[in-house]
Length: 402
Image (tube, rainbow, N blue to C red; front, side):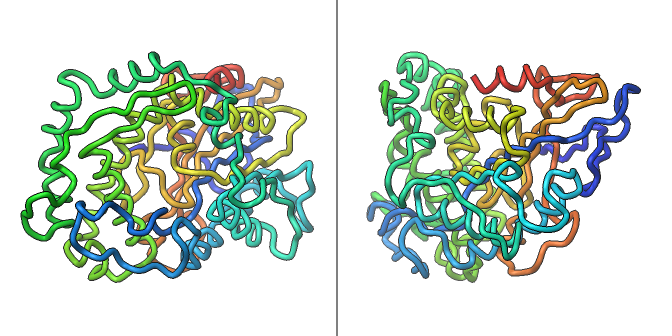
């Protein structure tokens, strides 16, 4: 589903109010919580995938596995001024001077890519300002971003596995593999060049590594490996590598977009179902609640991962599609944004939006002008406050966080 919809709210990027709403008056944004995926990185391992997947040598990257690249940092830095312009328009950031602690909170996971993403973003959000970033020492696990494995939110394995199988649907994984056979064949062609015994991702049937109280369920086999390979091709493309190096010259931009469905599918099956998402997002949900509450800062930014984005998207059953990406595929530097609004009577509401660069923008080094991002208010099933589709009451939004 392409969620390119305005939901009748007629909002310009610089306007603090929503037009065309209930006669009680305009809705005014007074709090924002943004969950952003880190920027472009290389594969997290070297070699990127097991040798039986492809006989080819994967392209080189200019930094260590899993680290934010210089290109990725530059792409994130282009987002800061756009976000600042929006939030100054809302009156959430000062028109002049530096944000204070009661104005802006920035939280990052302890990976290099998430810390450096936060640094690149704040450097252009508020140039010349020294802004604190709340993070643990690099590579020291942060339980806020790993609630299940850290024991902060034990998983119910039976419910988690049942939720995954419900998403898989009738016929189980065998039917899923049949449904995706043409796309699996295409990624095998990119990986192998020609049919080769034991090469590619489709030879092993898709299955499930069951959940444990301290471990999320995980796909195995064809679709799991296809998801990884597809994400590598996308990251190569987003890094701006020449297309002759993307998929060894055998992948087109259309392939990169189409194959991204595997990455989104993996998240739909094992990260978006509520039984998994609520537990995995439990610690971050505490930060989100604080950010939506009266005692929190006016703006909260969380620099995290694609899994965190998928969890939050699943909790709200919200969907998006940035140009060049598959539906619901988390974009590097893309963000889910929860906006708290109030009316003249003091009633509070929450809406959710997704903002991201297109794949073409990520590949380029061009500045982003006003209105140049994919930025959409998303539908939230069951939320229709004031007769506006996708507008939740604050109570409804907090309940969805678990």
